[in-house]
Image (cartoon, rainbow, N blue to C red; front, side, top):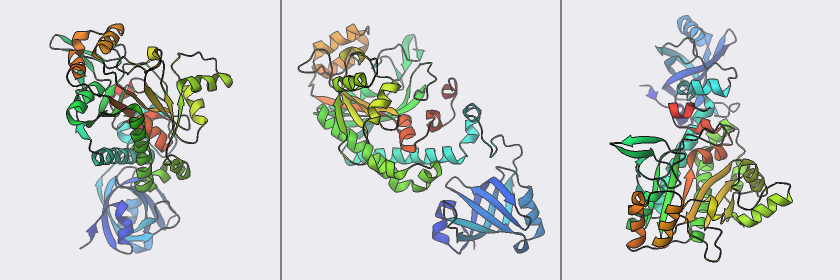
Length: 432
């Protein structure tokens, strides 16, 4: 009996006759040989159909197939040193399953707007395929990393009554007569979890009601947010750099084929696995920018040009430490010797991808935090539960958030952040 396999397992079935369920991505014919480009959701490879080795009916069927037709193919696996995948199938039979005609995403080049409008079909193409496989590996490796270090996974609410960073960029809705918002972060809830379980992480969708059309911004993205009790900032930075290096190494180890599809330079990625990452202060960053012609004053929040320049000065990700208090959220711990900065850090990725992690040590003084909430124009009643964390057994604690899509654009080396969104959703298409 012929064994059914997936394309990705071809290496284990060399010179064996197999059966594979596939879709056609492209084809060409020389008259006596038909070359079918096939995919099955695990990989892409070529099927070769020799006219003299099959019936006329099968050969004519192959010539008439349209892009994205689905079928069962039968044949023998062979090594193919000319392809990146390394294997192909010599076909002996084809069984058409589902016809396809007029598929809109042809092998020619298409603009990003067109592809976003057809994201439900674009997912089938090589580039988003590779990105999604790498995304899956990053998620898998994240769970492995934190589980191995004793973290507990928590799920924070998606509908919230309060906001970690103010409500000006939140999607507002009504919750049975009360104001509610789509979550912009799971952090505050993770802090409650850390004081119950020591180390926790949340992972889920977050939202920004921000009408930005830059490649760095999304309305919906996924955030992984660890929170750790009895931990100061320097210890948190060590976990952050170990985590990022672990992600990159696992992508190198498990996504070699996908990185090849994206033509990502693996030697460059290997540099990012070397620790420690360098640290510079916000003060030093401002000085560095001013010396290189940037018209910036102390107290600004860095934009894309500033972050790109700073990251370009290093061959690895770099931490920028202790930003001005006035541009950071209310929950960050004040610096012990300075009134104007807080204990925090952003991790900037090389190659112009900007901030991939933001984190801080959290304020623990009840009265200080209450005053910061008021100064931020927030209602202390909405944060009474959060203030309770400072009243009943408060401890030093730190945390950070990694934006999955931003990190993926960097690891994959892609130019357009919206290629990394997991599934076509209206919210992601409003601002292309």
